[in-house]
Amino acid sequence: MKTYEEINARIEAKKALVLTAEEVIGYVERKGLEQAAKEVDVVTTATFGAMCSSGCFLNFGHSKPRIRMSEAWLNDVRVYTGIAAVDVYLGATELRHNDPANMYYPGEFRYGGGHVIEDLVAGRKVQLFALSYGTDEYPRREVRTWFEMKDLNQAIMVNPRNCYQNYNIAANCSEKPIYTYLGMLKPKMKNLVYSSAGQLSPLLNDPLYETIGIGTRVWLAGAQGHVYAEGTQHAPSVNRTSLGVPTEGAGTLALTADMKQMKAKFVRGASFKGYGTSLALGIGVPIPILSPEILRRTTVRDCDISAPVVDYSSDYPNKTGKILGTLTYEQLKQGEVQLGGKTVEVGSLSSYAQALEVAQLLKEEIQRGEFLVTRPIAPLPAEGTVKPLVIKGKKQ
Image (cartoon, rainbow, N blue to C red):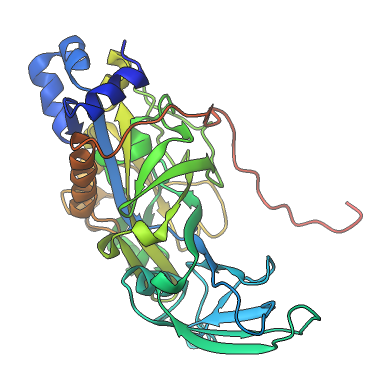
């Protein structure tokens, strides 16, 4: 057994053996589990994909005269102002003012909150327009100005739900194309779309939350952040394999980090035709190898991870619970699969190549002694399900 303190001492001495979740598979095969557990200190995991439940708090400082913003827009994208005078929250899926949305279906959703976040991290200028009802101490009623990230006092990314632990594979069994947050799905199940880094994904390498918990330090788009809570819709009570890997969506993480430290390459606004806007993020999580069993779980392969195929034209919107079958990530990454007696093309919404780059960058930071592992201050819940929204009257 190793301790966090022993591993961090090796990191600070630049003597730690750090491997990506892809590299560790072959290393354990060559060395054997027990010997590898003695040698390997950290395994880096990562993912890169759209994470709709993301956003940021921004603080502008006070103008002369002062204003208490009651309504505000950034590049015409509305922000939430129901907090202190010059603090706002910008959500990744918020649309630009007067965007036609799906009025003329399918809408294009060319620009939204995720794009504003990308612009800020990339160092571009953004326009602020704010209104106020005016008070004695905040007399100004309107402000319009341009600003950059460097002008802000704080820009803190605060994401309620990232890093889903496994997810659906989307299909469309209807007679017409449909447009979803997993992209366009062709009719008559002519294509499937999935979104996961599979064997690189953080919570699939620590499926029982043995090292990832509240307080865990993470690499969030290049900045050092941390897990501040279980993510929304965290639902660990699902069917799992003998390795502990969930066979459907399960755990999630709530993450935060300083946007001023982020790398533009790993913060990208996204538009989904017929659905809306989002934000694609690169996230890396280190797993300290405290025991052989923890190491064994990081050797999970794409062939060990399966996900359900769900019809997004009917079963998903109506919450029937039905699935069309299951497929492994090894099968999905072949580009086409056999399902329902026919060959179906497969596409990925997430980027395995960029996830691998994130895992490598995190590995290098740890090797340079710049990124330490942290003991969680509390574990993620190991049990729980997602409650439905029950539509009922006031007297019920």
